[in-house]
Image (cartoon, rainbow, N blue to C red; front, top):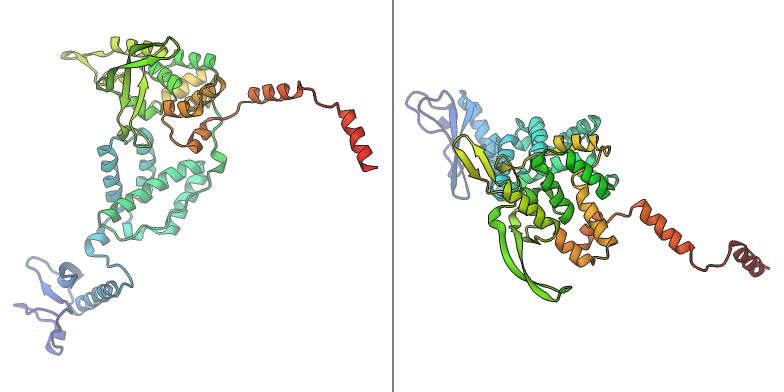
Length: 396
């Protein structure tokens, strides 16, 4: 109930006794509104009722007390004034800061985050419903976006709510639909001749970057984060030559990799040639003189960011429009299989741990099917007319 005020006292307090734990309304210096105070789990909550009429302020307090009571009996989690004021933009900002702190804020992440921010940013977090998410999904599909692209954005929306729940800023996550992506299986891969043609048409800073992906099957984000400090020398056994040799090995910290495990790569063959070229390109001219880039692959000393425009242009000029940089992972898996490299070794090189994930990259090309069919048909099978005669005799 209301406290005594020097100038105004709510009429209700003249007839109703004050009950312990029932909350109170009061005036705050400099505010034209009545404020309310109440407790939940020994914590005091104070907020403006937004009302100048004490009777309306009492009704607002009564509603808050019902919400407190529902929380106390476990019927519904209490949402305080701070939670009610949270907008989705604040949740997404926290998610972005988390991604940047973990070093995984890729250009693709920022692109998907932008779509979600534009649509939900100014909406109160508590007002996001399954129906609102469905409307967003329908709009994106009508605009021509693929289900996989819509899902990536929805995934970030869910993650932002999950982070807020983890940090106790919210109590629940809205229902967010996940679209079927079964028609999104990629089948692209490169013949080496076409890949070399694309490389020649890329900007110089992307040429060795692409060749490294072609020779390792590594993801773009991992390659972009390789630093000179990640290289060390190691003595390994060359079983074919039956001797021990010293080679350079690059180790990528797990925080830059999707499965969060450290990845290593011996720099031999063409990989050693790539690293040698990168050493000569390490020095970068600046206004104050030369500087040495900390990144193995860089653009004017800085990490390589979004390459999609340059990649699309080079593929178009090379006559292979529509190919993706990620097709290089599938290309590596196919080449490894065709050259007799065991799956266990190929998975280790690519940094893919599970058979299911590796199988997504190991697609079968049409020429492999043709080769298999010809090999099968070249064996000594019965002629068709013999099969028909045998079947007819069996029927009779």
